Amino acid sequence: MRVDDFDFDLPEELIALRPVEPKHSAKQLIVNASDASGFLDKTVWGMTDFLTEKDLIIFNDTKVIPSYLFAQRGEMMTEINLHKRVSAVSWLAFAKKTKRLKEGDELIFGEGRLRGFIEEKHDGGEILIRFDVVAGGLEALLAEIGLMPLPPYIASKRAVDSQDFNDYQTIFAQKDGAVAAPTASLHFTGDLLEKISARGVKTARVTLHVGAGTFLPVKVDDTQDHKMHAEYGCVSEDVAALVNETHAMGGRVVAVGTTVLRILESASSEDGRLHAFDGDTSIFITPGYQFRCVDILMTNFHLPKSTLFMLVSAFAGFEKMREAYQHAIDCGYRFYSYGDSSLLFRA
Image (cartoon, rainbow, N blue to C red; front, side, top):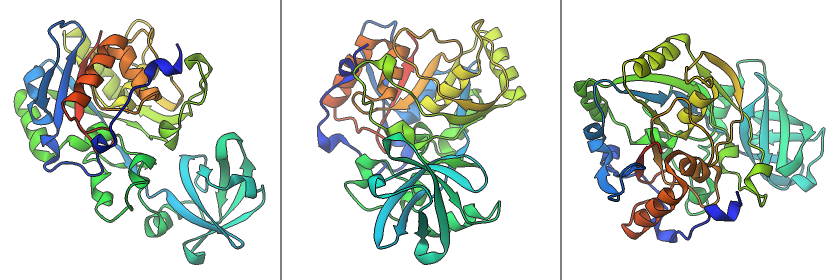
């Protein structure tokens, strides 16, 4: 499909710069592809009205690390966004001013508290950095000198601050490695989890370390020419068994976020069964994709011409999602990472 098919006009004032409080009070648009009557305007707090005790909700337990860094190379300052761990001391990163950087350059971070060397230069402003630390020592230094990697549509409008260390981290965060939050999960609070439990709905967790590549613009004209960046994910044997049991008992699998959907679909076979998974995935979902595992998707509102808007269009229907986004704009829904939510039922 043409990338321009996924374009739409979004008023700038609908880009959320902070989450609402309490977070479960965010608006939620219910989109049922099989319902011709239109859309329902609800809140995240009310999502349990659409679930039963047979259903299973799956969250992403990845933890965002402070991966946005300022680096000095000689007299030049540049900005570095780590996006994928390669080893205990090496990361792929996106850098500004890459035309002035070369392989072998030394980068100084945190006024000398951390050093790194550019081992490789790739296309699109990507570099491979080897940090001068012992294995296991990098994370503590990043926590001291790094900033939360807010997406550019927020960071370009205000400074990253201490509040973001809480706001841009989900309550499920356990496993270090993400450089972007699985933002659908930002709406969940302890009170909402108690309500879900009281409803009898089961929950489980998988891991997908979200990379900064999720924010990269699609620079090709046709979707078939776009290449996704790989992200690390993990599905345990226990979760795979629980998902398969849920489907066998007539229940539905609810993916909280496109990250959860991508790892579940990556780990599913054509017969619809989920299997244990531990590795990288670069799955790219566009209209025409045959879903194998996920029945309901909870997700925020995404950027025009983004791979994520393509994914939701594949899930709930291309025309349906164009109508849903126009409805959301007309009704003043807040967009992107700190914005409102949607609950999508598979076409």
